[in-house]
Length: 85
Image 1 (cartoon, one colour):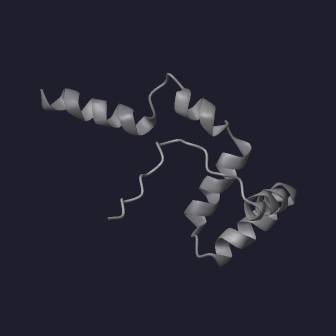
Image 2: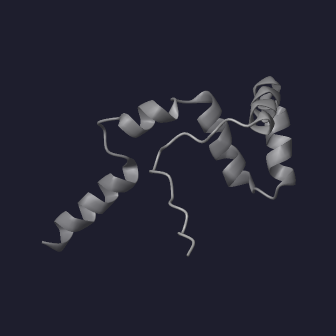
């Protein structure tokens, strides 16, 4: 009887393959305009492209996730909860 393969723990790093290393080198060499062209070719809309621009020029995602300040969406949800009382 074969066992079902187990999922790796969330956030675990995947094994670096030769394809992944080559892709990363190509990705790092690309300019922002090239990224936007490729993303548009994949079917992303203008809103998604703007979000990509903000990610590339803004705060690193790690700092954004660790930020102590609640995200605007969380503030809105908290405001709704207060109104219901």
